[in-house]
Image (cartoon, rainbow, N blue to C red; front, side, top):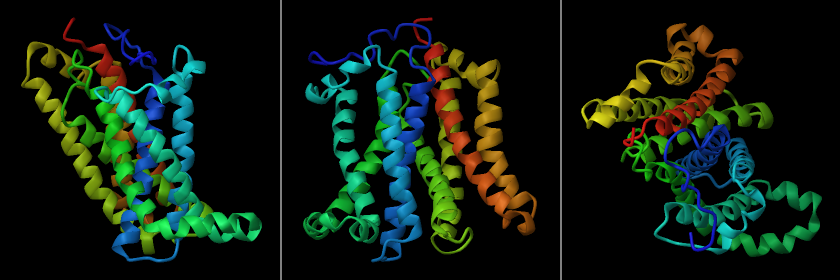
Length: 315
């Protein structure tokens, strides 16, 4: 990458990207997803104030993207040289485009956090008033750009690994869409958790009720996209058919069926529908369902990353 770090030179066989990258993919998707849902709810309800949901999502978005960058940089062979990817760009490279998007998204997520807590910040730090006098006229533009780049970050995590053409599970056109959908799922769950636990939002009313209704179509879309990946593998080339074994047998299949399907899909559905309203409206069901959704998204990232790298067209 024009003198920068080469992230893919060792991709010939075996697992090269390990769990820190899976955690990064989760955190980046969660960050973008949280910001997307908060801004869409804000626009949908034409809100002018910053609600508990928006505050929670702004905290989630900023903290998770910073933690994600720690995971990403920490996984580099030479983490102290990470600055090279910030000054060397090759816009024919998905990685380079993603780094540029992150360099824009991270400051935007910080500005969103400032907007969400403007009153609190100004009350405690009077010197910030001139800064907000500059930022406030730009609020609509910054929030709109934040939405665009939040979507881009969610999709970028999928594009990042889908360009690895030697790996049938990874090299699929629907992977970016799956990462957007699963990022939304993690963003919804984390925003609901934090808004209720830290900002006093009602668990099943107001903005959280909207998110609660939205999480099921998002989950259905995730299931559809996963099904599309599996069908494309079993109907594809010999290498693709071989890669479909990751869904059927072995440790990766256990990760998929127990982690992704069992925890990520079945647990929330059972808690919210199968056991009746008396259980669905409990505090336990609310938190357990949200946590299960986040774990399921992490397991999906782990499965895609590990199984994807384990099946190559090179054999």
